[in-house]
Image 1 (cartoon, rainbow, N blue to C red):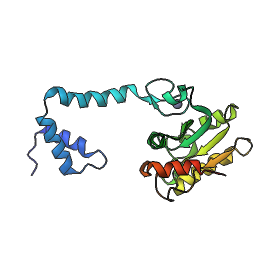
Image 2 (tube, rainbow, N blue to C red):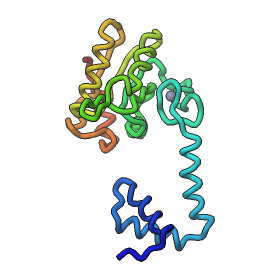
Image 3 (cartoon, helix red, strand yellow):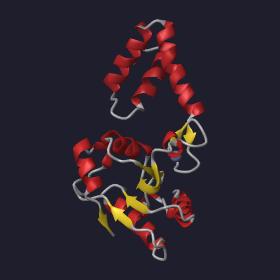
Length: 199
Ligand code: ZN
């Protein structure tokens, strides 16, 4: 059934690991790479290598960055006293695309998910609490996903900050419960930000 040589089979298998790529698409992409001249094909391979070697997490907010501090943390025009707490870098990118938020972020790098064995200590919650306790924070906006786990994560952080005077708000429920930020459209996210409520 499978007449591909070992290298081609390997390429197809690698493509098939990508999200949303089925076997047929993996084969089509592989045939495309086989037809492409060497320079273009190596461009893809080099780009993958470069992000894996150069991208790390910002020391302050854990956004993806090529430097110790990401562009948002380094930007003096951003309000560093307002911190929007998100689960993943892709949520930060969704919020940035609305173009309405001018504060800074904190990326948790996940959410509390007991069934998957993910507890608070595996996330960057400790570092977030340290930022809040440093005294330079005026508002914390919880923008974890409106799912059971996202809500529980936001609640856990609130509970750790009960002795702090920093107001904590939650994104308004313009985003349907159970959906995820990544797929919300720009207008919905802007509304959710401007309609945020104190918790
Ligand atoms: Zn940063």
